[in-house]
Each structure stands twice: as structure tokens, then as C-alpha cells.
Amino acid sequence: MKITVFCLLAVGMVAVVSPPACASGMIDGATLPEQIVQEATAVQRYEQSVQQTYQGFQSLYNQARNLESLAQNPVQNLGPLMGQLISAVQTGTNLTYAGQNITGMFQNLYQNWKPGENFGQEYSNWRNTTLANLQNELTAAGLQAADFTNETNAINQATKLSQSATGRLQAIQAGTAVSAMLAQQVQELRQLVMNEQQSQVAYREQQIQGEAHADAASAQAISTFISAPPASVGNATISPSSFSNVH
Image 1 (cartoon, helix red, strand yellow):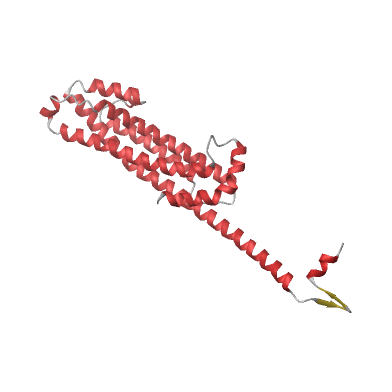
Image 2 (image 1 turned 180 degrees about the vertical axis):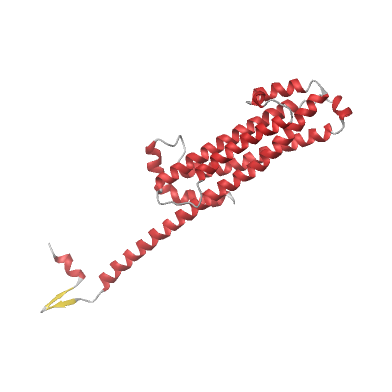
């Protein structure tokens, strides 16, 4: 889905959402519609970043297939790539927390919104699955997951492993597996965000259409009343314009 679709949601919501959202103190520097659009943009950029990291590890893995060449190559990109990878995992978890916040704010504002799935729980599931997969991939490669808890630790561990061809190969295999896993997870996250925002767009469109129909019906009733022929009561004639003479 293109960003313009999410902008439709923002346009439909901004007049209603902005004042109470800002007054509530729940939003720091951005209205709810702005956060919704920003979340979609951030996930797109996140996916591109993860793909680049995966391609970097894939390139190193292709070098690693020739151990003699790898032994002569210091693989200077290994440390930074491993740091980027662990940072990307943290970025993903942050995006899910943001998604949960947006879900909660939208639900609080539009309490009749009944999505077909529990988006808040889905964000939590994505986060838990990604972290579990990270630990499993590192363990399968013979590495201690506790050594890769943040970007700095990941770079330090990659630097140590780079001192030998065997260690480099071990780190590259782990990085390739983790980045491939994360690339798959990001696709699921993007789909989750799209599903939620499609539900929000559909709800707001339905609500706006209902309001428009109500306004049209009210206008029609007024028009019918004004244009109605005078009603006779006994010898008196009563017309809508007669009310203007009543003081």
C-alpha cells in the first residue's frame, strides 16, 4: 500500500483527532494521524535497511565459501554489519511498541472500532518471535546470545571472532542466518501495519459516510419543511414563514 492511502486516513481524522489527542498528553510532538503515517514510512525504511544488511552478510558469506581467500581478508565489514544487525532487531521492537501505542490511542478515540484481529497482541507476538529466533540462530551457530545484547557488544564479539578464519566464518554464518530471518520478519511486520491501517481507514470512511448521510437527511428534512404548502386550521392559514412573525 502506498503512503497516499495512509494520508487518506490522516485527512479523515485530523479535524477530529488533533485537539483531544494533543490535550490528552499521550502524543509527544505529533498528532495521531501524523504518527500513523510516520509508522508506515518508518516500516518501509526499516525494511530497506534490513535488506541492505542481509545483502552485506550475503556478500561476506560468498567470500567465506573460499576459506583461503577469507583467511587473507580481514573482513573489516563484519563488525559494523553485526552491529547494524543487532541494532535492526532493536529498531523492530521499537516499531512494534509504537504500533501498540497507536492501536491503543485509536481504540480509545474510536471505541466502536472493532478490528477483526487483536493488533496489539500481534505486535507483541512479532516482537517475541523475533527475539526468540535471534537467540535460536545465534545458539545454532555456536555463539552465546548474551554476547549480542546490543550494538556495542555485537561489534566487540565480531571483532574477536574476526581474529581467525574459523571465527569469521562462524560469525558470518550466524549473521547471514539472523539477517535472513529478520528480513522475513520485517515482511510480516509490514503486512501487520498495512492490515491495521486498512482497518482504520475503512472504519473512518464508514464513519464519515454515515455522518454525511445524516447531514444530508437533516438538510432534506429542513428543505421539505420550508417548501411545504401552508396548512389550514379552521379559517387560519399556517405556513413555515408565519413563525418569523411570532415574537
